[in-house]
Amino acid sequence: HLEQSAAEVKKPGEALKISCKGSGYTFTTYWIGWVRQMPGKGLEWMGIIYPGDSDTRYSPSFQGRVSISADNSLNTAFLEWNNLKASDTAIYYCTRHVSGASNPYYIDVWGEGTTVTVSS
Amino acid sequence: DIVLTQSPASLSVSLGAVASINCKSSRNLYYFDGDYLAWYQQKPGQPPKLLFYWASTRASGVPDRFSASGSGTDFTLTITSLQPEDVAVYFCHQFYTGPQTFGQGTKVEIK
Image 1 (cartoon, each protein chain N blue to C red):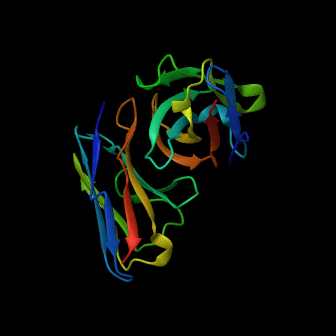
Image 2: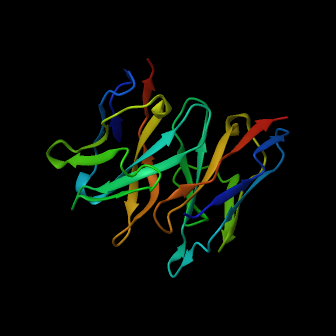
Image 3: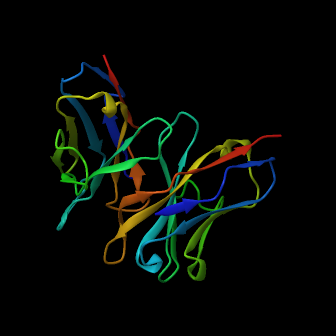
């Protein structure tokens, strides 16, 4: 199970950190990813972290715009922005990926999503 | 990045009829242990749900009216005997290499 933090309403230029808490499994043995879904649109893979060794990978489309981290003591992964834009308005899903030898595989569990609204 | 192109973009099918969705990859997704492709179903207002992985392995709890096939660059998701609860958007997803990518989605409706 992946429990995501509540919806957020922010202004452009503000910072934000949303969370995803894993339960019912060993948090450090699965990759946790983040997927964006803009209103009425498809799915965009943003990036991923392996809590076991903090290996973090980003899609070039999101590199430098967001930061992914994890706190193993809390079984929680985070997605963070320093400077939100209106175009960041979307639902953000955290995802659990089945783990390959050294790479993430398919998504077997999805969180319910965190709706982020950025508006002045 | 690997581009996944789904067709059609939308599909209107009668109850009990067959719906087929195609997913074409810009690169071969086959490696020694299988095809690195998954399918998901997203119903309105819900997160996506895993249907198939390794191109054709059905996830737990998925009804057997759903099937998936294909290898290399061409893949198909088929729903035989469409039911009202199958109304959803269906996405393919490649996990062959980073960044992982999704198809643009295919919306399935009842005619």
